[in-house]
Image (tube, rainbow, N blue to C red; front, side, top):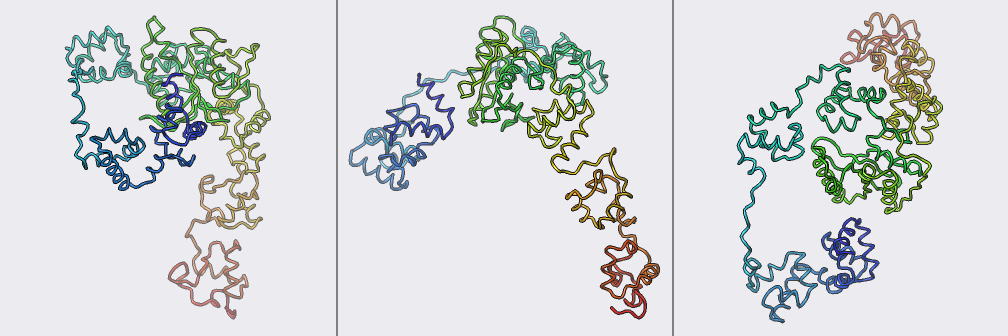
Length: 579
């Protein structure tokens, strides 16, 4: 194996993987490891993992001894050694004691030794470099062109629109954007689609625009502005549904019931589905560009491997002789940037080349997919009697409520909202189309012992609910919330009184707004016949007796929360009573 391939293999490993590889060599010093496996030693040094490996093996030789010293001790030792050997430069010191020189370099201490002996620095001893030939940037080359020459360049390159120029050559885009005359020539020659008032388009007009393309994937790549505005206006899902249901667009649906944007991607996940592997579609990646979070094509749930099905590759670009689409080169640049992000974060990745399916046939592509997964220890079983490239019927098309519940139990879906995850979203949309969302939600709530959600169809009138609460002894907001959580209330009782009925708990329990109380004379007239003999009896009764609902709880507090006309408790409760 070439040294470049070995370096690339070790760089792709995790920290634990490289450490395990170093331990497998059985070496205990850096010099011995460099002789045994120079590529691994080089990668460990670049990743600053030498010290962690040495701490595990408990060795290190002179390197370990020097690494345990402080900076002052190292400098003093190096000066003494250089004086003893009569070194004339740092290179002679490195030849006499390589581990010492390596630790000095890692800690940036070689300059201290050189200044002590007045040794010439590298800038003074290095050979003179050749004069650098002046490089003219593409932007400067474009600036040197006249407006007519720049417009002729755009015509010769056959750019379809300004956005295509931006994706293909950002330097050319900025130069064109700074020249109004060139933009006018470009538009006059048909280099741009006519402006569209997207908000005024009817669904028939949207369908007319989408009919120019064979599938959603072509529409997404060929008319970015239309897709972006359709998504912004909320018509993209309906447009896609109508185009696919009418047969104008081909809808690709895998054996798992989910839709796919390309046939190659569908084949990959059909193979995983038939082999019994669990996977997630379009998981979010731990980085984002300037506008939105990045997504992978898939991820194996039983491991940490992400899956990318690349539409085109650099090798395919070199092999093809026909005129390539305008987005081709831009896609290659995006692919390379995405792969660099995977490597930078050391995320394991399975890469599938969709060009093999398009340029060869199904079974060479299937063999490629099987080999890629086999390299990471995932064995995919291939049944040649199955056509993995044929679109399937929608999952759940003929299902009843019981079928959806069985699917939920098999896939650990305990709430209706769980159906909204990417791998089950098509079923969620199908539930809405069939009008079964409420029934499935209620059954899931009963199965998992949750209160059935209150809605207009099963909602209890608030007057009737108040009578139920009184029978259960519920007279306060906290008691109601506790009873609802404990499922003591019947189905149809909402969790929020204010949100459901538009009234607060004071109105719900006492039929009055907060702060509305009876005048003092009328309150005393209601209290006296009740036969309350003390203040304590009144304070207990006012919390539960509905006859006292509109009477202040602290009538004796004249300054705050009471009646200014209040005199004494005997007067308020009735004459000749104790307090």
